[in-house]
Length: 521
Image (cartoon, rainbow, N blue to C red):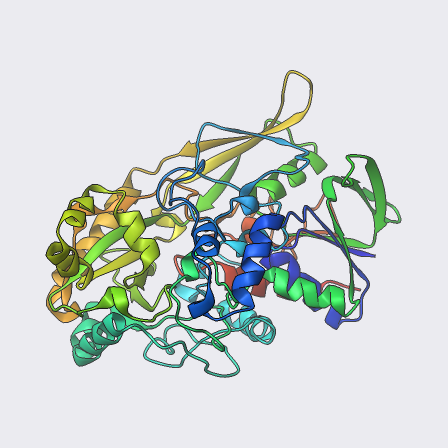
């Protein structure tokens, strides 16, 4: 048996590679799913057209507001639910002096709540990796054979190839179409300034998108990819043995292979033999499992992060009627800043246009004063774009993880913030870079209104057990193995030597597919 731990993007990419090799795969997973009453409302929406949607079902889909037990307005639910973040039969305790970083025990992991952005990593951002962007290229293509993409070959292609088999773009909003037209007219000046741009690439099935604008709440037709979609197909085709409610607690090596120690849905302990194990449980659960299996208590490891920050961006010209326009509300354009005076690495910028989700979020900020005047509202929202920017891990703060025992002797993962003073300044330099090119961009970012997230808040984190050509203690080899745990392959972002600013999920999946494709049978 080849055991895969978890059902998020890394795990499912590895499972696909193993299945394609004809190997027997068992997936052990928390498997939490959407609450039945929300699932029933979602099914009613999915079976009808927007004109027939019930206001009560829409309210349930949106949720009460954008705040949650997980912090600020940027916490993202799915279908109004926090089920992807909730713990089930938690085998470990996480002690957090740092609040916003969470993990998922859900079927499909955090792909239930992700923004669906997909870009490869640039070699510039992989300078300390023992593998190259070229090594990942065939695995990007393999992943995009089963994960949908709207990838379009445009001016970003030379910097960040699509690797996609076909173009299936979503139509941009009128705001973004006008914004991109401005950028195309000034492309030479922007290129000289080191600002590259193009249409967004998202993991979405474009048809039959009805442009309802609800994407950020959760697509009523489930067109936004979740690794649960691929998992469901693998189960239906009887290609994997899927065991939800099974939480792995420790992996032991034996002369005959591995023993997987877990608890089932009733809480009863069980032990399963395995030939190999592929751990893609997410950065925190993978760290807990690795340190527990290695008996590495009180040995701190560093978790790297790609910190993010948000600017409001006001265009010089209005696009009237944005609040009445049919559109999708996922990211609609990308910009990449490649300027050594800002960072030796890429700074990734995601551009969002108007949506009900963003309007409701902004109405919880000091900008809510415009709610009292319809003319002010139209002036603001007809010009407003939101820029969500990401830094390379070298420019970001970090977290420290260590495994301890509590008073009852149970292993506890402690998570502490390790700030890097220069991280905030890197975001300011990026904002000033955009402001200095405002004429070419057709608008200006409001740099003083920047919101800078705590480390870990982007969920673009990892690097706890980095791959090395010659791994040292608590480092892994090119197949994600510790020398003391042969046959156990860590396949999520835990093994990244650095965290590029460009979107993380596609590279996580490609690397997991690479590892599962290359291990000996």
